[in-house]
Amino acid sequence: MGNSFLDFSDKVVLITGGTRGIGLQTGLSFGKRGALCILTYRWGDHNEETIYDAFQQQKAPKPLLLYADVSNNEDTKTLLEQIKQQGISKVDIFISNVSSAMVINCFDDYTLKGLKQSISYSTWPMISYTKEIEKAFGHYPKYIIGVSSTGPTNYSIGYDYVAASKTVMEVFVKYLNYRLHKHGVCINAVRSRAIKTQSLENTFGKDLADFAKKFVPDNYWIQPEELSEAIVALCSGYCDIISGQTITVDKGTTFFDNLMEIYTRSQKNKIKQV
Image (cartoon, rainbow, N blue to C red; front, top):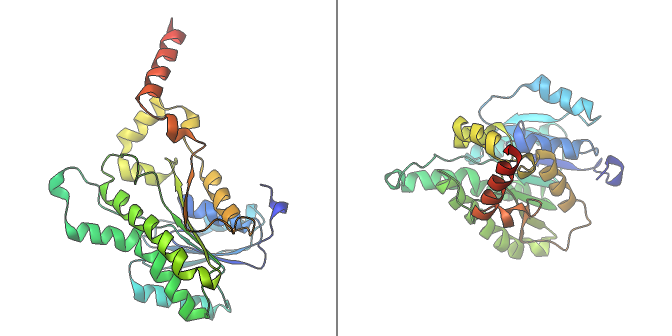
């Protein structure tokens, strides 16, 4: 999808967790098509100049970087007030991207408090931001995207809370589509299998990341830009018939990512070694 194919020059895109990984790449995909991107951050491990340079290299408008803890509704209200103070009068597209949860090592790690915390970061912001955007600007975003994962249907080490909260988010996408359809809102969740970002190592550990480098072929991975381009397409106006859905972006590889595929690769490696 080339830059000239779509023009977002009159659009405002709000992306939570937008200063790194998937969020940042999504901002760049919209920005290079002319959108003004508002990127929120929480933990402060971003480099403003690096982000500004990345947007400049894409000839994209300079993004607005604002601090906001997505689990804190007062932060959300303050964020939207700051946006209005910049002379911005709308949010056309909202990408709910933040995910945070404790890694689970055993059954005893399960606590109601931990689950609630995961939902407050990974699920509820899609709802709370949508509500507050309407209060601040008088209308809902035309497009809402929740960034999910294959966790709800595929096992990942220690991923229990994230998988549970993403499942809840995907269910809400269906119900929010019903509630907001009359307002002309298109809302979807986008799943992706593993993407090589720092978040992968932070979530699953360096040992798994090193293992993957050794035993997993490059085509297993989804590139951040592939996911972000799919998100852009869903917000392009060409896919408005799609709403209330969970879209899996994985090149179809989830179908054959199983014991049989691992065995097949091992046999091919044996032949190469002979």
